[in-house]
Image 1: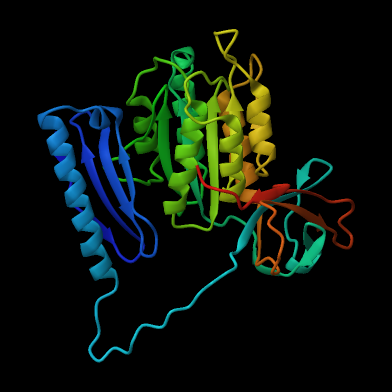
Image 2: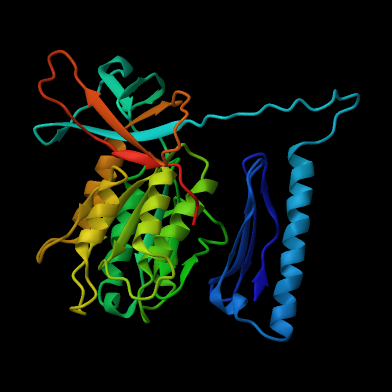
Length: 360
């Protein structure tokens, strides 16, 4: 077993990785200034006994010291510094991925004034507007259950092609799952855009076991918070069946609606007749402004992956701060309208709303 040193990319990210000889991530720690630390541990760590458990507990203590040291490094004291000024912020920015099409083709070159955003029927002021190929944080959530055994080589190749066609500034991470979900080490780092390293992370684990799809999506949504870019997306590759998750679909759906991340899915035909449920993948994608693809016989995962890459590259990003409200509704309905002179009938695809409910 090897342990890499503390990596400091202040003020953006502080990471620590404990990696087994085969490259499997045993435990990891991520911290960003102003955000809670995230600890990722493999099932073997969490189920340890005796000496291994004591070693893991010592690791937890070390990671806590890392957080304190990182906090001090990110905000060094100044001489004669004035007392801290406390500012309370009561509203949050809502970020929407918006895909605009006309007759099935992507529409580029639109301006902020071409869009109108409504929340629960009330017009909102767009304060963030981005077009073109802006960088994105992407989580690749790949099923490694027994029913996926013969499909993994093609999935890994498609993921590599996706990375090759992405913005060089994109950052990606990998969650492999069967009945357990784990964030994989990518060359000792949490994020990467290196196609070969991403493919290696996807093929490092053999297929087997059951399917905890909902838990894996939840792990990916939470890990997106540590990405450095405003635009965020998950790409889920699975047969859509779930038979091992602790979380229910309704909980993962609520978490997805809180995340403001677009979820895309590539649904593959399962060899187990009772596992596949493509309707759940479709519902999850529609609720976040993404798309679900189900390659038929003769069509490849590669083609679906390329379609997702094109969709991400063509997206607009709209952001607004909601007007103050007194009601206690946890789901806010959002409608985006788009119209531009000489562009014909335009259609905007975006999340139908977002949730402010409890985290899971």
